[in-house]
Image (cartoon, rainbow, N blue to C red):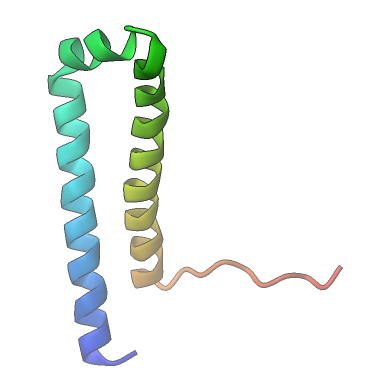
Length: 80
């Protein structure tokens, strides 16, 4: 992997890690506001689903890049 590619990976990891941490911090410091909207019903019922999807994508992307930086890759199929 080239030096430029490594720097790009580190930058993406830093960016996604900061976004993930900031998102969790916002969520936990504004629990009352979050719950106010999450329990309204109707179309508001999609908010918990969208929030879970958002956290899944952001945190999952961060975790994937971190594993790649550490040199851990998914195992190839066993051919069964």
